[in-house]
Amino acid sequence: MDRVTIHTDGACSPNPGAGGWAAILLYKKNGKKRELVITGGLAETTNNRMEMTAVLEALKRLNRPCEVTIYTDSKYVIGGLGTWRKGKPEKPGWIINWQRKGWKRRDGPVLNRDLWEELYDEVIKHERINLKFVKGHDGDHYNERCDILAVEARHGLAKD
Image (cartoon, rainbow, N blue to C red; front, side, top):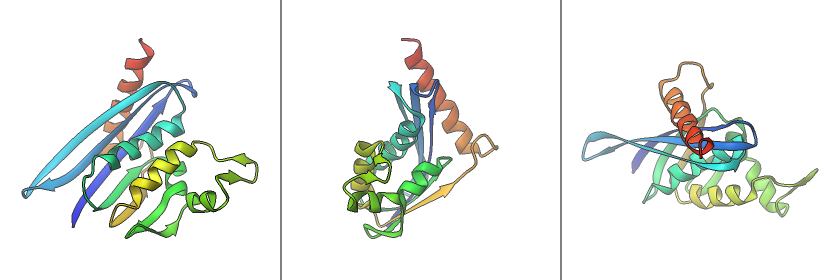
């Protein structure tokens, strides 16, 4: 089973406004350590959508079931997804209740439903999904790199 470590971050300023996201995928191929950096953004979005998009786009790059560890500074993403094993929630996130309740919360519809649905479709493909919280702007090498890349992607859009 392939193991992949993913580091992600999203940036948006103002919020809502121009946003960027970044992900760094770390894996081994032919016994050698590899790194794939991906970035993108939207002219009008929110920080939560950029955090989610970073995770989503990273998972979309995986072409077979993997054991995935995702490091993020987004408690929203961690709380929403929970942890997964063999395509089933091991420690369910909010997404499971939202689905059961027709994508409704007590105070109205689930925000970012489109991205939550896409994330669900991706996480069920994998052997294991673990999300780990990393404090943002606290010296974590990959979190800092992702932050810089996400801000650069956001700035590229804000200049247009």
